[in-house]
Image 1 (cartoon, rainbow, N blue to C red):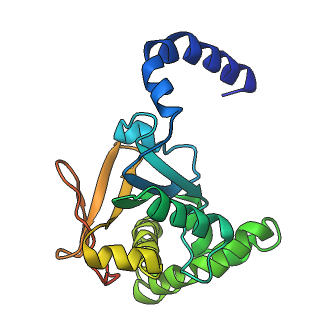
Image 2 (cartoon, helix red, strand yellow):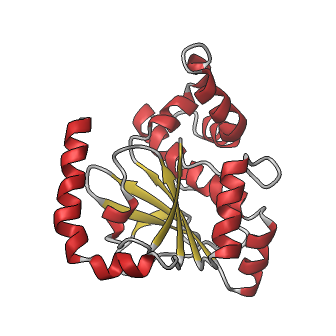
Length: 224
């Protein structure tokens, strides 16, 4: 969409949706109280509020290239600050890490060396925080075709981020006391469906009526 289209959309939002939901926005001006932290990729094809049909104020959203959360101590100020605020200030009850099909970041991760010259910042981000996923996938699935390997990388990357979240002291404490749950999701763009990781089955399963909270600690294994 062009900038002109965005401005037209803003005008339509204010004239239609905002006027129809004015009471909601007036209430939101007094503060937020979301129960879910939704961590996903910056990719323009995934919209957390659209796919979950969440209303304004219901999701606390964090996005970056590849839905990557560095482990505690290695995290940049943005990721660590967002997690800390969500868990401690907002009292988040559920954290979802949601990857998606055809993820460009995971494609880049599988051939990360080619990014060094053209996109050095992307290369540095993926090399520093995606190496565990890359090595696991390439070392354990050497004979898998490219499309299937990408799917495995996308799923495995989500599980790696769940493990990284478990290194945060505040999250560990709340997991232990049952005040917080972690969920690993994968959104399939072409079908509009969401799959959740089922740890006992060691695979992502179509989610219809419920998610599958990831047990603590997670064993990052996906069946090929």
